[in-house]
Image (cartoon, rainbow, N blue to C red; front, side, top):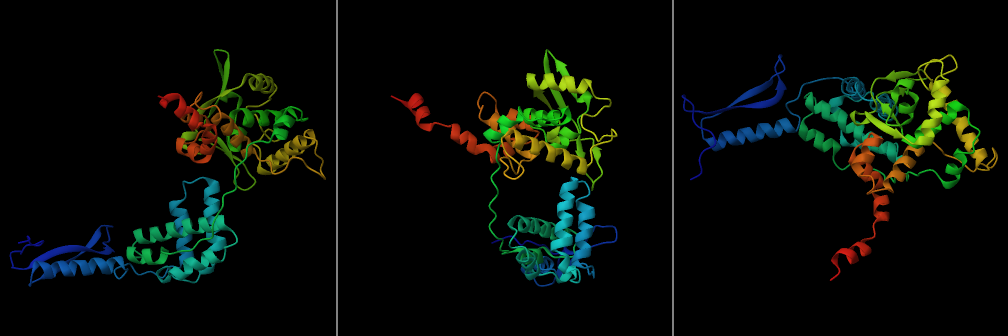
Amino acid sequence: MAKAKYIKNSRGEYETKIWDGTYNADGSKHRKRLVSKKSSADLERQVNQLKSEVENGQYVQSTDITFLEYARSWLLTKKAAREMNTRKMYENIIETHLSFLEDVRLCDIRNSHFQLAINNALDKPRTCEQIEVTFKQIMKMAVADNYIGIGMYDKICADINLPKHIKKEKRPLTFEEKEAISKADFTNREKAFIYIIYSCGLRRGEALALSKFDFKSEGGKYSVSITKTLIFPKNTSEIKQMPKSDHGFRSVPIPDTTAAFLKEYISTLPGTYLFTCRDGSNMTHSAYVKMWASIVKKINYAAGGTDTFPVVSGLTAHIFRHNYCTNLCYQVPAISIKKIAQLMGDTEKMVLDVYNHIMEEKEDAAAVVNDVLAI
């Protein structure tokens, strides 16, 4: 005979306490006393019923806060420590794509509201993915705050139809772009920036934050330490005393030719930082845009293009970073994926996810099988 789940108390009753989905004034869970004079099975039925009611939102805190008010609160509470660009992305989703819910109470949000937010942006598949992530995270905090039951969350967020998103394929530098780099009529500042992102694969902000003290020579070899990044709050600029992530702290070797030019360039600098505005202040966003436009224009000219018929287009600083990683991946196994990830300031998973096709191109399964398994 199966053992009863609950035993009788001193009064001859079957008793237990179960969380009812609400909280006490001190933040602890409020537990409801359930009693049955009949049997342990009857008490278990009551327990299961209460748990079901809690999951379906029948025991939640009452609030008249609107979804949009709560979404803004979520952004301030949960995303304060995130990177500025990430916060801007979430803010844009809330203020642009979820603002139509400003008069809808949080407790009245339903699956149809979620799907409508997606439907309003069907022509932007990547935006739809961002809407989905943002919406679900907001609702998860609502569950944690006990404004929405976990069962209600499942109903709201289930079966959401998103448009198919085909990611744009990242590209390295073209042959024409590579050839043009050594021929372009750069200023020394432009040349220093291009040489650094080409030879070291740094992120834009990491390169713009470099000071002369980040470079060191040991055993005749030059390297650069990455410990900070330049960010652009609106059109101002700010040095953030850490890279994009914990993985971003690293030391990157510099090729000899690039090192020779950088040594000369750094020796001419009147101040500490490599890339500044004319008054010596940190480079603003508009100053960077102007510098980069000049760089692309000169590469285009060096490649044989004109303003009317450009040979080079769509060139970004991140393409140089992608080019750096692509070329290193072609050198596997002379260099390991782990080391490539360290030089990039990223995880091994990221390198494998993005660049695995390069490793597959290098593989010659038939030759390997023939060499090691031939009888």
